[in-house]
Image 1 (spheres, rainbow, N blue to C red):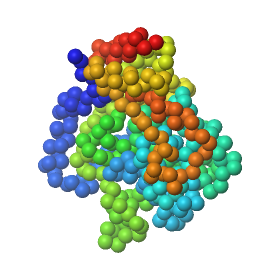
Image 2: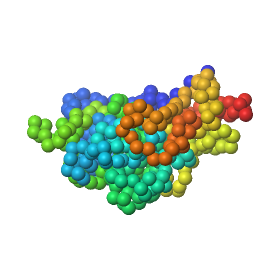
Image 3: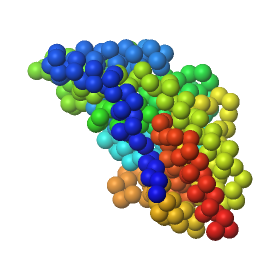
Image 4: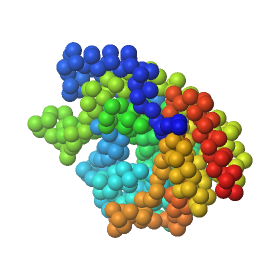
Length: 384
């Protein structure tokens, strides 16, 4: 029986082996493990790729969010942290880190519902909330699964209400909106180099992008305990730098990023064509010509009474799947006493019961992709 993984990292390593091994050997030779030369080189490479002004290597995508918020508190309020009166709008249908970062910055997360077609925060509902809300300071849109949010609408709202925008681009490296790379449009962008991402390392890592020179300067202090001089710091900082080894590996993989994203898009094309028209199965939609999905995940919706049955059936046929995410943030105990909710959030709750992510490995063979689609069609033919 075939075994099809969500993501085959071993195959990716074999494909890039020479480049990655050479990068690791270079680190072993120079032994500069803290702020080694690969970090500056990676920052420069990603800065040019995004067409941004600054990129800073950090320890994770989560810390990229926290550092963005901390830098904005220092820049806009002259304070180390926000406070609970400061409200930041985001989606409840995301990984826990998005909401946690807001809480860690001292602010209050405000959860606004999503668009069922894109799984992303609904900009119309953001505007509805803002018509009567007070003390809102920013928005964190999440480009979920690699699908761009409508950044024209979000940036327009931000300009109207004088809000900052932090793009949570953890799953969307290489995606675009209106010709601009995601992460280069908002006040800052937060990227993850977790191994399963489009651009992943061999452990934790991340990057923060910005066009604001003051944020760049503040973040560079925060990642090294809060100061230019580690023995005389200016801010409450972190040990949040990117490791030299992770920078070297990610830099080696950068050579393949455009090729691998195009491979993901071709797999998505097969899924779109071969699964079209199945009753009870909804495919991801690209709502605008401005949007270029990077397909970190290919996520479908299945009628709630069949989703778990389909996942079990696929698993029995050797096909791995994942549910991102089974519980929206507003249903988690950690946010119960610190959040604000706008509306019912019923779409987010519905999506958590319907979404299912299919295998999306750049080196996935076409025959394996068709095996996935044929197995899905077999399930629905038996369960009509």
